[in-house]
Image (cartoon, rainbow, N blue to C red; front, side):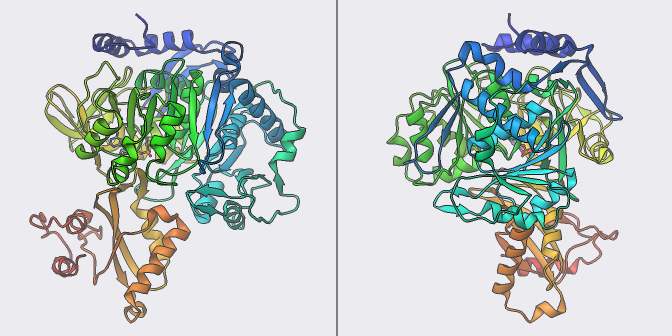
Length: 635
Ligand code: WTA
């Protein structure tokens, strides 16, 4: 029996039991048989959730890019590693082979070195979905620099915060990006951000749109001429198992974004293993994940997981609606995609359009469909199953987080029977627990509670960059000796998990995590705003949309409300990005607060969702009368 590739349900249960009985032996066998190491580990796992400290494969040495590139060269050097599908369907797709990718990464590694980037330095990557993004990520890993990819839809303020938080010394960007029929001036956004960043010495600029840019002398360089001169080989830096690989920011319920830090060996082993199993990947498959590499899904399941398996991974620059709503299906047909992985929000948006956009394409190459990022509702699940998968492709509803590095709960296609809206069973090595509010584990089935994980898996984030205390407080303090996910879940009669959503103040809009605090902070920057509270409410396509309750200052009272709404969304766009714009804004005389001054978001959530029949106990409020006033003005 191979632990590495599960093929039926009985095998899953056997492997799972083994992985729980002796996790060290389980992961050791996988690490030994499926990866190349420069030096073997001394100890498979050392952990203590109370500190918290987690070390996998300690003492081992490796370079993840040797596992993603070099070792494939003699067996599949001419196989396509990255299949780049441009925004404009008239522009030709690029098939980048493993050999070519290796060369491009080596050249880029040499450029980074020549520009003074050293092992351990932080490099911020702010690029659209073009091959240079994957190449830059891998080049950082090759020289041991820590990449921090910032999604290229974030604003200059958000970018500056992330650059400063990890003290990056370089930014890699492009002149601009194409998204549907729009072009976005990325270099201009970087320039604006860098007015607030002292530490950036170099900016490398990829030419993509040909738009006009300002190049600051001494700081900014076009990338291509540097690559043209660079040597096409680079001996990979030898990294320790626990050396940082990357930082990726995610929103918290309070405060600034959290720079989740992932390390090398455990992350590699886990993403490769889960990729292989969750997508039942086989050598000739063409795998496509539609996420952006700016999110964890892209890191783990566009770049590292697929490449560690020698897969062909599609990188798509565009959007699902351009040039029309059939684009995804056109690409599936064109490249004969076998596994397709996307977000529920995209499915809901496409399900609203004419079915012809789907049916006119030949989707018979598809074998497995996946979703990630938020709960998938039953209707969307069925549409995906019936029309895209034509009822023959299992849907893997994969639950995981930026913090977890890889998928934790998901069906294994062709093994685990799927059930709409259920992420089903934990993957091998993953030990979930449901906890009640008093900190006790809820055992048995047909129960619900707060979702925790009892035992470390190799890809768990090791810390929050520069703030280990916050890491401990956020994830390891709510429940003793458990990693707390922040999600609620239920376990059905057969032990399947269904994730019900966040139990904290994080709101997931179109699959993107948005903390309430940073949005409220942004709104409060508007001179007419005294105070604000943001909650989520159900939305047909986005899953959740944002509802803002805003108290105006006296000076704002006389202003035109519609203009104010526009200005407030403008402030949010500037501070965070357009993804955080409010769908509804209600100006209110006050906010319901507890006697200790905490906003009672529960009540605001109910009003926003038009579910006011049972508001619960409002007697502990400092100002119960405001609730009626808010209800009267609700949108
Ligand atoms: C939510 C994305 C339900 C969840 C990989 C989690 C999901 C947060 C699912 C992490 C799913 C992700 N079903 N909810 N299949 N997948 N979530 O960090 O609330 O961007 O905590 O990582 O998304 O979002 P993140």
